[in-house]
Image (tube, rainbow, N blue to C red; front, side, top):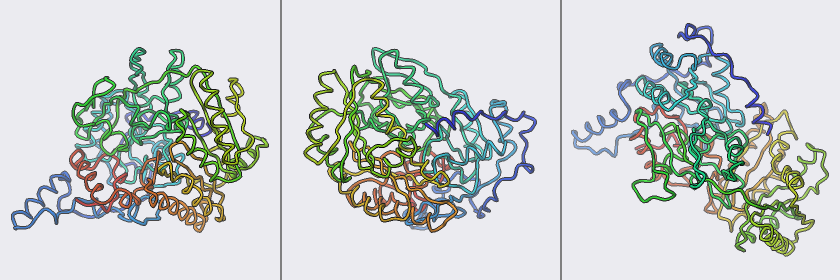
Length: 557
């Protein structure tokens, strides 16, 4: 909860009066921008430039295969490219025109700021080790879909980059502004627009937090079953295709969104479907936008699938001598057909951190935590079956509780794990990374990775959503020590390539951002990346939507 409390407790600064929104910002210096390279087609939309080059090639008897649709030459192609180890994201920054700022101010009023502190805050991720040489030039706080549409249209008109901004809990540099531009803070769009109890769905704006949503739903006997980091908002959760500890039972964000609305780069508002629980009508645009990380449009409304609150639940915990035994039990539990809602794995270093942070005396060994839901009899039956499975894999000290306060106290161990890890070395930064593998390879992947992590001089903690093959590592390092940063990157690199070698993915739920771009070609292949680039070019020919994210810079079409 610590990160969300910091975020929520920070009052928004009083925004500057309209008379102060003048450029150049000589009294508010930005980091030194990189000088853009001159281009004979500057000012033309990128897609038109592409077509012009293609036409010229055809007229000369050539083919369009020689035409490259790439990032401009002024950008650093190494950052996020294959084998990149650079964490500071560089970009091409052009000062935004005063006419552009005036146009935004004409309808946003004081919901716009050029204050340096506010821009720096929005350009510096709170939970990420990634950095950028630039920050946004302008931060805006729209209150409606129409304001978002007008902001996007102005940005497209002036070719100003856009960075959508939600709860600021993302980890892989999604909200960096390497090219400056406009940060669209969606926190003012937090209305719950309609609740359909009999249909078990709810329509919300993107700034609604999942915790606040569940507080609203609880009196109605319903809940939204995704639980990422505290402070995450629905818009950002869609953009990163997040999940959480309940994904083993309820799926990820893509499985829990019925439809959404988004503003495309040209200002069009697209609605991806109806409220029907299923549809075979047209392309699945919702799934295209979910996970697009703000590179295709700005999400302005989401219709979510809800679940009934369980009538009864049991929380259990069990200790193991090796992390492989713990992972094997998680696999065996899922293969048994038991409808477990959560299976969480914590390694011995993570348990040690919890003991230190909370004054507990838990056995410092790999530990599994379970949650079972259903009727009282069903939940207890499933608990006893898992207890038997654990015993067959050298599990010990299996305990389970049903009383609400006891469950809360036991589950608190898992909820506080991340912040306990930070508390081990509060002067260090954390490289938080995640991978996901087919469930049958989980024990092997964790075991191989754990051997390397344990041999490292850095402090490394492992937490896993073991029910779906997804595990996270928190690598603590001293940011001023380059050798420690390189060691953290080496460990991250090893984990990712181990997962990829097992037909896994470089990220199960954190997303790509700038941090995981360098692994996408190995995971997806260049043909898939070119297809993604073509979609991006068709919808966003001026490349204004969160440029420099998700699609590696070396990919050309």
